[in-house]
Image (tube, rainbow, N blue to C red; front, side, top):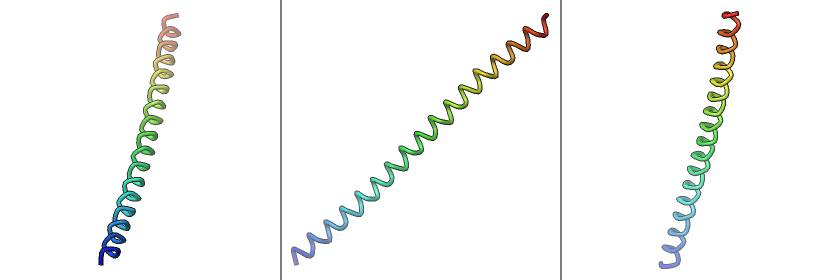
Length: 61
């Protein structure tokens, strides 16, 4: 009876660790996607500010 119980506990721990590993991997991918989106937004914001600044300078001339 004890070996069967130990086997069940080992299987349960393996399933839980697999689930946690998959969850951590998904969270890491989500964090990387968020960083990528933020970096793109900052880059576009900087470029847009430069375009507006240049347009304002052109209109003053």
